[in-house]
Figure 1: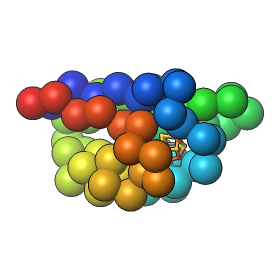
Figure 2: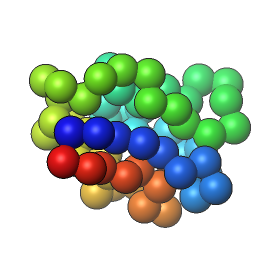
Figure 3: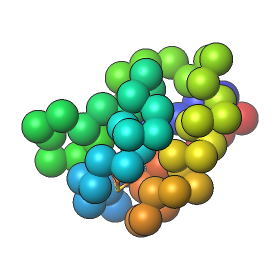
Length: 61
Ligand code: SF4
């Protein structure tokens, strides 16, 4: 699994970090970033991608 965030789409809502803080971090940034490997967190990463209001999270198998 490969995960990335499109900074042009991210509106910094913080939902991905809330769902999977091991992989996503917003912090004080203007857009969320991928900070960890998705291995072992696949289900939460998929939930975050499904929950992202702007579909900014891209997952490749
Ligand atoms: S859920 Fe989507 S829009 Fe919200 S911070 Fe994460 S990537 Fe950005």
